[in-house]
Image (cartoon, rainbow over all chains, first blue to last red; front, side, top):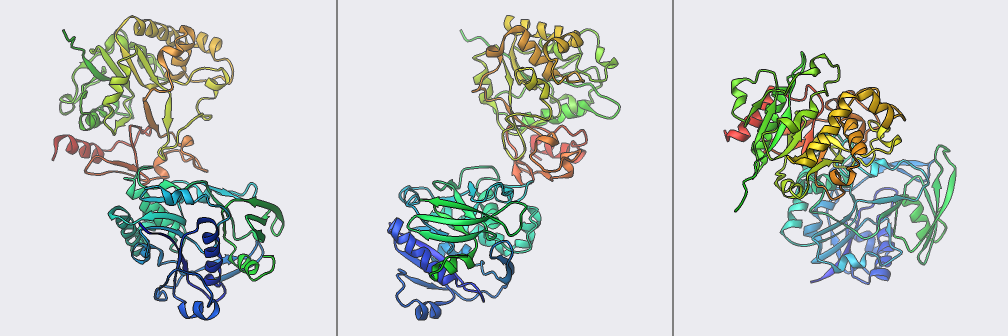
Length: 282
Length: 285
């Protein structure tokens, strides 16, 4: 059985997801020692700008025709409205060259080998439901359930699956939900105007669970630790990271948070990008 | 020689001007007939007219024993200590009428058969989240260190131990002001409830370990709005989330499949179309 990781990277006008993916891949190789492939609509860009990349395979996809936009924050005082290309995630079953695949967002930074155990067990599908916000006292109810009346929230940011008929059915279901998003958005009382993989995955998991609580999705080890895009990455050295986290009720003010040996979802992609470029992320 | 033991569910229905509790009992009986693989007997205690079309689902229609003091009561709990005397079964599960049984709970009989009595003390909201401490409805229980029984779901064997417990319960119900003042003086609950009366009866009889235990599988979904985990508490949960019963008998609230027993609470929850669906599930049409 082959095992590897897959990262999706589709650049927009401001965010170089290929760069973020290259960085995330280096962390996967360091901590998990598995091959990493990239799924991208920017192959030429990757080959020209990052000729020394270490990706196992470059899996090319078409640039998405459906265009949706969202606000990308860079700290609590700066925001840009940019394209958000996230429709390809449900096709991961067909795209992956591996039998068992770890899929992560390009802004998910590994600082530990905690996910190794997930790659060594025999579960069909593993994903995070439990999460931890690095910011103190921020309301994270949005990440507990898709809304307060509805089903549990799962993070499509990181998951592990092995290829079989069950996971194929799951990703077919995610595709079906995506294609009928207007209906499912209404059915599950979702306010967001944009399609979001977290929601589609949450709905699909809920259906795979027989509309009950458990059965299909197994929790990945640890928790999904995240810094929101209103927070700022300062540094990431070895397995340590340092952030400025948005202070509750004080716009533009921050509190320092440090992590050691914790994988972190760094939602502020601009800040992460600045750090990768060699500066601090501020 | 194997001794045949009769087992069944028992409900008390006393109609008011606005609520047809007999109809609720009928819907509950249909849900039991549809879901239970072993015991689906159910009897109703009532002094109200049971329509002919409802009669076939009930084993027995039992008049309320002795007098009916409830008629003069605003809170209508005065007859509930009579279950012990009215039951036609050797082993009985008492349920509130405003419930639906959604799963096969046959194993509950197996578990409870090891004991004289068992009260439910675990409830969940429709999101399947356990309600560990109900600070909205159980302040007086917490303040007075009382146990946390739910009279709406309990089991008893017809034997001396249960008889003695029900005698204490009768005493509490009939001497409510005295018992409440003595055993639940902190954060006093103004209205009499069978849950509080039961907690006091457990306290008086010292039967905590005999009627409650952590492994007890008796659980139900409680639809009182304040315990649903919402920022805003609507007067009726039906104003916040939708529900549906499909042709397989799967009942969902906000797309979440409900399990065990569903205590719907809202008096206007039960509709004729819903009853018709339950009838179709039982009759297979």
